[in-house]
Image (tube, rainbow, N blue to C red; front, top):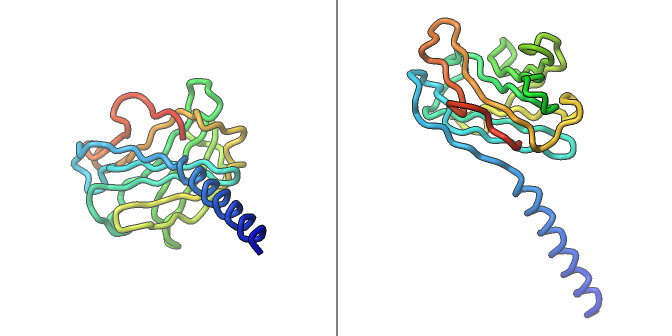
Amino acid sequence: MRRTLVVLGVLLVVGATAGTADAGSLRVRTDPDDSASKLDIRKVTTHLSSTTLYLRLGSWDRFRIRDMRETWGFALDTVGGHKMDRFVGIYPSPHGLKCDVGEGPHGVRPVGIRHATRPDRRSIACHLPRGWFGHIDRAVRFRAFIEDPVSPKTADSAPNNGLYRWI
C-alpha cells in the first residue's frame, strides 16, 4: 500500500511539473494606449505547442464584432530571413470571426482559414495548426497590427517600432 502511494505521489508531482512547464511558454506583451481606434492593441499573447500556434490580440476597450471595421493581424518571419513570410488576418465574416493564414509577400497564397474565438469582450484569439507555418521555431520575429482602410489614423502596430522575438 505504501509503495502504491509513493508511486502515485511521484506521478502527481511529475504531472504537475509538466503542466507548469507547458503553461510557462505563454508569452504576454503589452502595448501603450496610443491609437484613436476603439480597438487599439493592448495585449499580444502567443503560445507555440507541438501542434498549435495560439495568437491573441486584446484591446484597451470592450468591443462587439460589429464594431470591427479594421483587420487585426500578425506578420511573421518564420524562417529567419528578415522578410515576413506568413500573415494571419483576423476579421468578421457573415459566419463569425475568422483567422486567415497566408504565405508569401503580404500573404497572397492562402494556407487555411479557422474560426476565431472571443476569450473575453476585449480580445480575439486564433488557434492555428503548427503545420501551416512550415518549420517554425520559438525564435520567430513578428509584429501585430490593426489596419483600417477607412481611417489610417486609427492604425496601430505592436510593438510600435521593430518586431517582437520569441513566440
